[in-house]
Structures are given as C-alpha cells and as structure tokens.
Amino acid sequence: MKEIVFTAPWKVAIEECNENAVRSARAGQAVINTESSIVSAGTELAVLSGGEGWAPLPYVPGYGSVGTVVVPDDGGKFKTGDRIFTYGKHAGLSVADTLAVPVPKGLDPTKAVFARLGAVAMTAVRISEIELGDFVAVFGLGLVGNMAVQLAALSGATVIAVDVSAERLQRALRCGASFAVDALKDPVAKIAEITGGRKCSTVIEATGLPSNAPTAINCVGNLGELILLGSPRGDYQANLTPYLNKTHLCPTCVTVKGAHEWRYPVSGDDKNFIKHSISRNVEILLGLIATGRLKVDELTTHVVSPSKAPDVYDGLRNRKDEYLGVVFDWRIK
Image 1 (cartoon, rainbow, N blue to C red):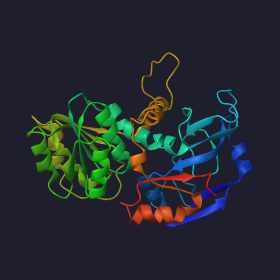
Image 2: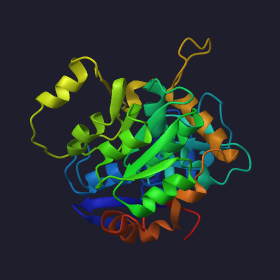
Image 3: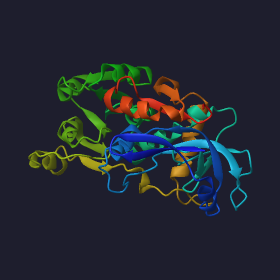
Image 4: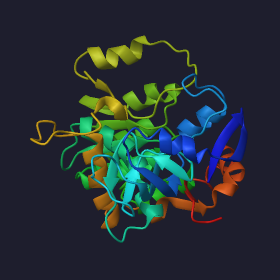
C-alpha cells in the first residue's frame, strides 16, 4: 500500500505505508481500502508550504476518502466490503477514525468523495439566515466556494458569484449562480446594480484572503451578514475602523460570522436533540450528489493515479484554472 507524503516544503513523494501500524492504530474503528481521496487545495498547499504549525513536515496529507471496509468496526456498524465515506488521508489504507458514513449504492467513489468539500461549504449555509428569494454573493470559486454557490441556490437564493477567474465564473454559472462578477472590476458597484441598490443579505467570503474582507463587507446590505468561510491566511494591514463601523453603526449593523466546519459536533444523538452535525451534513450531501442536485461532474478536472501527486500539487499551485477538483483514484496503479 502507498501513501502520499509531503517530505519538505514543496516536495511531494509517494512512499510505502506501514499497513501493520494502520491496522493496530484503529482503536476499534473500521479500516478501509481507499478507492478515492479528494484534494483540498487551500489547506493542502498551505501544509505543503511548510507554513502550518499544526502539520509539521514530513506529513501525510488528506481530507476525505471513500473506500471499502477490510477490517470492520468493533461496534458492528459496518461489515467487510461495505463502502463508506470518511475523513481519511491520501493513503491506500485508512482508518475511519473521525466519522464513517455509508455511501449510497451505485454512487461512484470518485463522485461521493466530493461530499468532503461540500461539508465545509455547508457550514456557511447552515449558520446563515439565507431564505427563499434572498440575494447571496459568494467570493472565491474554488471547490468550496462553488459548492457554497450551489447550496445557497438550492436554498432558494439568487446567487452572485465573484472571482478573478473567468473560467471559474463561467463554471459557477453552469452550477447554479445567476450572476457572475469580476472581482477586479468594482464588485461593490456591480452587486449594488444587480440588487437594485439593496446589496446582499448574505455574503460568503470563501477565499480566506484577509484583504477581501473590506470589499466583501461593503457588498452586504443593511442588517445583513458576512460569513467567513475560507480560513484566513497571510498578513494584511489596513485601517480597521471602517470595517468595524459596518458592524456597529446603524443602519448597516452587519453581523460577521465564522463558518469553520468544526463548530458542529461530528454526530448527533438518537433523539435528534442536536439537529445539525457533520455526519448528518455528509449524509445529505451524498444524497444530493447521488441524485445530481449537487453538481460534481462540472467540478471534476482530474481523476488520476496517486503516482501523479507531484504533478497535481504543482498544477494546483501554478495552474489554478486548469486544476480545480482533483481526485486520486487509488484503483489506478
């Protein structure tokens, strides 16, 4: 069995994984033979740069995977051969130690694995006050941003997609956005024009670029909300007072919310006292993918062997229009 390893900043290798160590470290959880794993470009490139203290190099990356059970869990929830989704690594053998959700029968593993990035995007919609007929803008149209566009549209919103990439803007329109706005051409004025001067009741900032925050908050209408979906990275110096006044002074009074995925519990309880959980979000997303309501074919740019990992990460870093939805298919040797 192989695994992908970030050995040093911007260095990617494919190495043998220690199968015995994986099996012995399972702590009663199911072990899967990985069929597919998806790349989260923002997080994984940040780790590959060597700049993430929580992931010191060398490091085995990975965000989500789908595979078949080879060692059942101790609780008897899954049996050998069951196909499950989990938050697994880029490795041929993985422990379902965070969560394990059954994959609907007939759903291709390379499609099902997109539920991982969908679960990140769903957090923004879950914490929002989006209602039928609202105007919603999404800044940043990577995988997470595009899925936020789709989920907001499925919630009944009229979605305005904002990005610097013409290719990503067109893809967002194909996935459910009603309007596409070039982020370099005064998006505040354009969004005001589209909305008849009201601006948006919800703006989702999915780039994680701190420098986008002043523009994004100026696209929010009175008493609206700015949702920070992308994890902020990098330094940015500016006068904070206008931003704070947007949140404090009438009539704007914009509410700013953080949409980190882990604000929700991994699972609920049998009596459903906890309405939202990561597991429930994943179950819903798998159903949306299986029925075609969440478009993942449109997002898939590469389904490749793990042996292509060095090329993949180079492409994600340097050819962003060409590389978007990248899935490693571990069945390809």
